[in-house]
Image 1 (cartoon, rainbow, N blue to C red):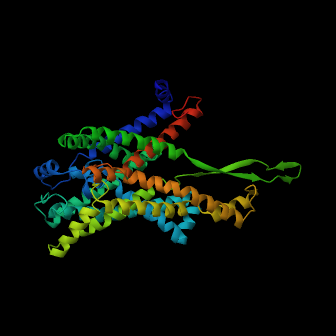
Image 2: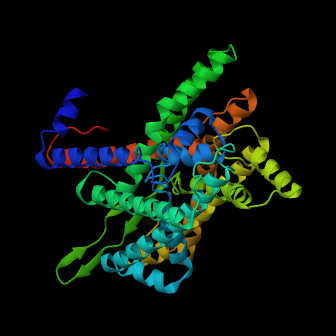
Image 3: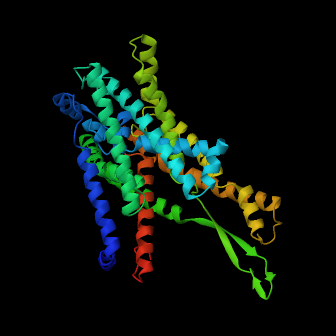
Length: 437
C-alpha cells in the first residue's frame, strides 16, 4: 500500500496536481478562520461556548467546515454554488433553450457555467443578508447579538464581504478542477465536512461519558464504519444490460457485430436526492426563523418546526425521520428520471444499429430499460434513505445530538471514491499499480 502512495509522487504532473490541491485546501481553511469585519469577537466566542450540536445551525456549520461558527469570510461556503448548480440542472430539463445549450457540447456548457456563477452571486447576496439579520436578532445565536452596531453601512460591508468570500471559494473550486485532482467543488465540501469530524466525535464522546454510557460511543463508531463500508459496496453495484450491434457491410469492410453493455448503477442519482431532501426540510425552519415577529402564534409555529424539523443533525424527532425518509425516496426517483431517459437511450441505441438481445428496438427497448431502471432504483432509494436517517434514529433513541448526518457521510465517501478513481486512471496510464486495484 505504501508503494502505491509512493508511485503517486513519482509522476511529476500528478505530484504537481496533488500538491496544488493541498495548497488550495490550505487557502480555503485559512479563509474559514478570518472573521468578517464589523462583528463582536467576544460575542462570537461566547456563542461558540454555548452552542450545541444539532439543529439548522449545526447542519449549515458542518457544510461550511466550521466557517459559519466563526462568522468568517467563507461562512457561506460552497452551498450557494451547489444550490445554483442544482437550480440550473433542473431548469435545463424544463427550458428548451438551456437544453439546447447543454447539447451543443463544450461551448454550450461554458455558457451554462457562466450563468451558474451569476446565480451563485445572487444567492450569496440573499443568504448573506439573511444570516446578517439572524446573527443580529439572536434567533440563530441563542439570543446573543453578534452585530451590536447594526447600521446600513455595517450591514452592506458584511454582506459584500461574505459574497466576495463565496465568489473566492467558487474560484478556488474551479482552480482545483482545472489544475488539481478531481472535481474542485466536491473536494471543497469534502474538506469542509472532514474538518469537523474530530470535533463532532469529541462532542459525542462527551455526551455519552456524561450520561455514564461510554459503550454507546463504541456502538456509534461501529455503525459509522459499517455505513462507510456499505456505501462503498452499493456505489460499485450496477446492472449491466447487454447490447448487441448488428454487422454492416460497407464496400469490402464488415463493421459492427460487437457486444457491449449499458451499466446502470444501483445508486444512479448519487447524493443529490439526500441534498434535495435536506434542503426542503431546512426551508421551513429558515423562513420561520427569519420572520421578525414576537407574536405568540409565530413563536408556537417556530417551536414546533424547530422541535420536529430542526435539521438533520438534531436527531430528536420521529417526524423528521419519517419525512426525510419519504423525501429521499421521492427525490431519488425524480433525479434518476432526469439523469437517465429510457426513450432517448433506446433511440440512440437504435440509431447506432444496436439492440438488446430478445427485445425489439425502439419502444419495446425503452419500456425494457425503464422497467429495469425502476426495479434497481427501489433498493437504491431505500439504501439512501436508510443511510440518511441512521444518525437521526440513534439521536432519537438515545437523546444524543449527533452533528454528522447521513448526507455528510455519503458526500465524504462518494467524493473520496471519485478522487481515487481519477488518481487510479493516472497511475494506470503510466503502468503503475492503482489504489483500487
